[in-house]
Amino acid sequence: FAEMNKSGKMFKSAMEVYEQAVNCEVAGSVASVWLAFARFQQERNRNKTAQKIYLRALVGDENRPGAAVTEDEGKDTLWNEFLSMMRELNNNPQLSLQQLREAVETEHVALIQQRQQQDNQSNTTTPTTTSSSTNTILNNN
Image 1 (cartoon, rainbow, N blue to C red):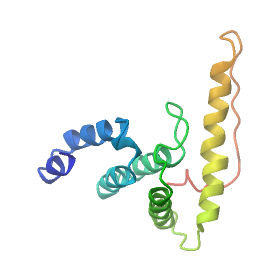
Image 2: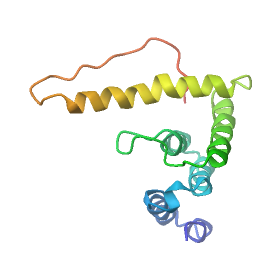
Image 3: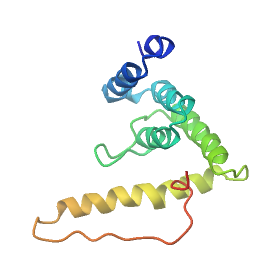
């Protein structure tokens, strides 16, 4: 349905169908669904959204911690496609898969964990935020 909406230039409807698919318990664990969703966003020059889709599929987000895609082969495909996109966006063809994985761990997963810890604190405690002056891979685009 998403492809049909996309070909009919019904982008909002296509986006809704993709979201329903990735949020489905069964379809949401399939790498090809996530890959199609990310590519759809890339085709529309919505690279930040595509990045978030890759991250949700590979490591999760605040709403759904942990990888949505569990099959190793599917994860490998997503990591490689994500790497290709990030190389292009950062104009850095030398970016390695290891560097990307480390960036995801330090820039994304750590932030999820920090937010979860803040959520677990009582409402009377003021959450603290940390800032980093280091050059990031994920937030440069």
